[in-house]
Image (cartoon, rainbow, N blue to C red):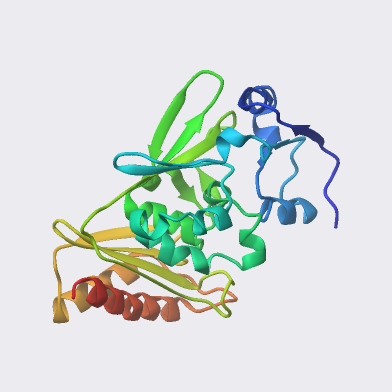
Length: 271
């Protein structure tokens, strides 16, 4: 299939983007890497009347190290962030998760913020941003606002972004002194995760974030747990996620993966 007809705007400034979103609202879509959007257009799952191309805006393609955070612009490709020299030191969890995002070819085009905008519950970048307590930076013609990752994802491919807002970038905290671990299970490397898990130590214990099970990535904080206490916590979390059977896996298999991977990762970061 091919997409229905739409207008195309090659934005020369951020103002062009904001004007297009203000005028067309829900009938406009922002094109960054296009790795998800183009497929949706071709299958007519998305039918915008205006496509706004932002990839020539240099101000949106910056990775900026700030005092306690890294700001990643809307145009930063996944491959660009993976090649950033400070990634492993500043954002070790993202460094662990990024190689699992698609394949080398898709990472060369796909953007970090595009993955967040798409809001697939099995995607690695929404999971990582949630685990780290990051924020999404939104902007329209009148104001800017920051929204925590835990409040940004509203459901499968649903977010808190208003129709007239551009995801300008994200702010990811630089967390010192924590240990991080990431793992996922998929049919093949680069496929959508059946279950993905990220674990990290916190000042009060440990955090486990899980993607691919609930409609949104979900995290839980616990004090330091071991033995049966850890098993009980993971079992309760696995059921709270509300896993469902689908063509990829059964709900029981997903719960088993949450228990197994969660125990392994928490053991790894608590060493």
